[in-house]
Length: 221
Image (cartoon, rainbow, N blue to C red; front, side, top):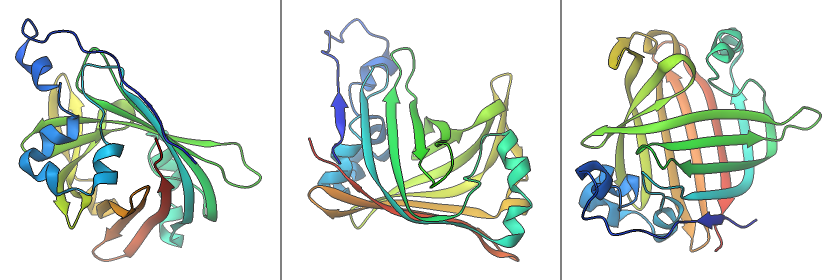
C-alpha cells in the first residue's frame, strides 16, 4: 500500500510575495516551527505538502474501527448536511486518503475515501488553513470549521479542538457546536519507518465518547 507523491519544480522565489516565499516550506512546518523536527520521520515525509503548489500524495490503509454511539446516531443526519463525520460503523474498513495543496493558496485538502462493505465509497472532504501560530482551521461545507491547536508530541502530530467557527464574509464567527458535539482529538503517530497510526475521538463532557476511529497506514516512496 504505497503512498504516491508528486511535487513540482520550484521557480526562483525572490519575486514572490512573502506568503508564497514562506510556502516553500511544508505547510505544517510553518505551523509547528522548530517543533517540526520533533515529528517522527515518517510523519514529516507524509506532510511534505507546500502551499501555493500542486503537491499531492495518497496513502492507503485500514481503519480497524469506525464507531459512533447510539446518541451520536441522532446527530448524523444534521452532520451529513455539512459533510461532517462518518455515518457508518465498521471494522477493518479499507481507506485511502488523498492530500493535495493548491497553487493559488496555502491550504491543504483532504479526500478520505472509506470503503465499507456493501456500500458505495464514502468521501469525507475537508480543507485546512493555517491561521497563525500553531492554529489551523479545518473547513467542511458552507464555511463551517473547527479550530485546532497543532503540536508535536513524542514524534506524533497532534490536533486538539479549540472551538468551531463559521466563516462569513472573511470573518470567523464562533459557533457553540462544542456544546452539542464535544471536543475532538486527532493524532498521527509513527509506528516504524514506513507506517503510521491515526486516531480520532469526539468526546462530550456529559454524554461521553460520541465518535471514534483508528487505523494504520503505509507510507512507501
